[in-house]
Length: 357
Image (spheres, rainbow, N blue to C red):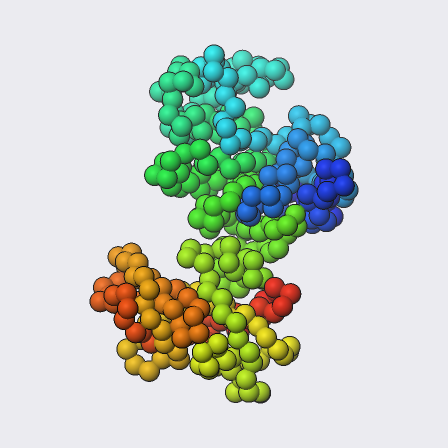
């Protein structure tokens, strides 16, 4: 296990910044997920730690050793790639042994490490097969096993599940979480899939536009997003955003929606003017009594344990609200909606958040 620290790291391709002034500390044994959309810089940042991309500014420390100028083989990290990168003419055992043979690890040590990794990943029966004889999930296990036998200080995963189908991706995601619990090794995991991030991470690093937008535990970034970008990117379905203005003062502050409805806040932000009100579907519920606003049902999405209701408000804005699992609502119905005052977020013109709690 190893601590990893980046201090004011930059990466440029020509005159274009692709990583901009990133500082990050990863604790020994921690599983940190880099989450962000395509082009946000998450894979580039991982490759900078691995040594596959140069660091043009700042520093990298791995297990107390300055590492930004070290070649990849000297950093004692193991990377698991998206496309598996297995040698097709070699068996599973030969693929796992190849890197160890190249650095002169004794044969008995290699054999012991392969046996240990194959037991851990439940693939003892696959050791004499070639990659063409394996499923996608089995190939990914081999790639992970090849990393485990190196006994690295840190594991780096670059979207390792993106080539798997949905059912296999869900199953392998759980296996990776169990693997981290067994190994307790430092792991960095890159993905654009928020479900993977929320399932696996001790902490999530959300990247946007080549910089870090927020760092926090899964529930911190879900419940207290630092910006409108984070609020819209994390959560499925996405957070609702409604343009509002402040009304009142002191302990009786409210926000006014576009249809004139007033929603109370528990306290007022220091700023004044126009904001976007952010509310997740579970904090905007269908009620039978008098609600704070109303609208017309457009779509009803029945999910079993809950029902998502797409509602067009009187000012034309469409929001997603939540109803009970067994809901009788149909498109065209008029519904009343109630806001949870403890789960409201305000976003200013700069996109950064102010929270009601």
